[in-house]
Length: 162
Image (cartoon, rainbow, N blue to C red; front, side, top):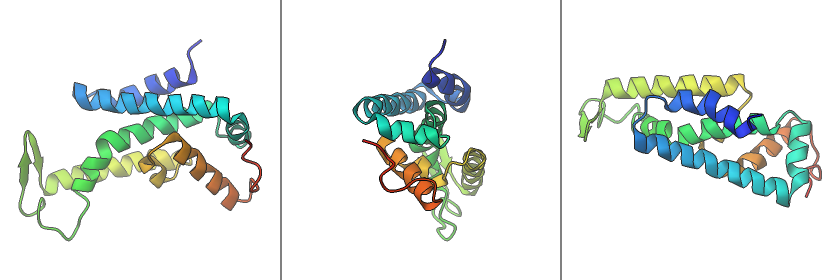
């Protein structure tokens, strides 16, 4: 039977990275694997923390999907999205920039913004906050999920486990 990490990789990460060149695809994959290793460490060192998440619907499979989306955004889409985000700046919109084979202009900004909106839409359907896609570590993600559960009154301060 395949692990949750493998299922998330095949069903989420592979389709997202299918058309990427080798280097960015490898970078996304390495980040995803690192987040999985961090989760395994947290499961061993603080098992109550992960169990408390699972009790509220954040099981390992759902976390692995979040890690796949986070890795894709952090390593690939996020930097491109940042390059086209400024509505007021004419640099890159009115004055195109060439960097290697990339062409940063108004069209690029629109396309990347649409791609980011689509990814955020997927995240929203999965009850994933957009800013979770920009978090740096598995531990940061887990902390923010607990914050959300606390704000919704679903967990108390001591429920994180050890």
